[in-house]
Image (cartoon, rainbow over all chains, first blue to last red; front, top):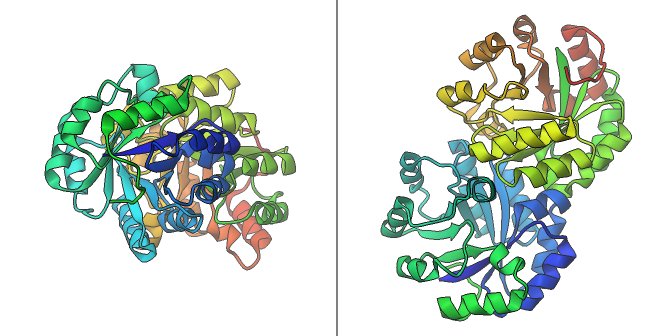
Length: 215
Length: 215
């Protein structure tokens, strides 16, 4: 189980400084949507340049203009780019084709996707899926990513999948049993008093050593 | 019926140069998602500084982190910011509250929204709705924004609404009868041999003079 560090609501330089503190404990580095929309593709380039050994996830949340956006992210150094599961089929298919062309990865964000549709999205067998409770659902509705049917479906389907949304230390033991490809952790590290201590604790709980590939 | 010029797949300086050629013929200027993701919020600032008399639409396509993204767009000079209709309720509610706080506007993008959900979104009576056929649906599936039930529903509901997706000269007569608040035109102007001539022709067909407010 890898650790994907989600970087949001930060400047690029703060994101770099923070990641330097925790790079020995995390596997994948996510350039959050807020960094991309605030600073553009420069945010992806800067993170790949600073952390060339890491898998860089560009959380571009594509929902249209798939070829342009995915090429932009991959050209900037992203290894994985994200597309919304609520996108039209034309968009998902284009993301898949673009990922294949670049020999890179697509992550399908399942935010607000119906259970029925989640199953139909499993045709994208080469994708990484993200079971995602959004920031707004967390902050406004108090939701957290808890045990749910989607996680069992993803696990049994044999695809690569990740979990995101308010992940703290508490659910780690449960998640280890489900063994997703990665667990996505944001503010529990980035807003900790001591980010490096928090990241080290996650690594200790999860086990393994960061080695940065996409499998 | 206003003309919203959609600027996509351009550098900021090309977007400014192009808009200078057509500013006398169009009402609202949309900073496209591709500009925001490629160049960040600087793209919104640059367009507002260059065209302070125009209504600036930031097509941020928010689907999470609504307060942060909408504040970022409004602080950069946007008069209207967009949110996806497929977003969770928490996101749509936060966009509405942020628009109200800033005394600015939200546009709900109906891309890939079911007919049933479209009706339920009409509770956002102060929003501007966008009946939208996406770039990928146009370019891959050959779809165009044609006469459809949603447009009748939007018209009869009394909300402000717009139409987007492959709009050329052909549908203008039909759209004039429906009289949406704005028609969103991208490549039919931006990729025309003579953008100013194309924009002038749209203005002639649509009538009126650009005056730039959000009503």
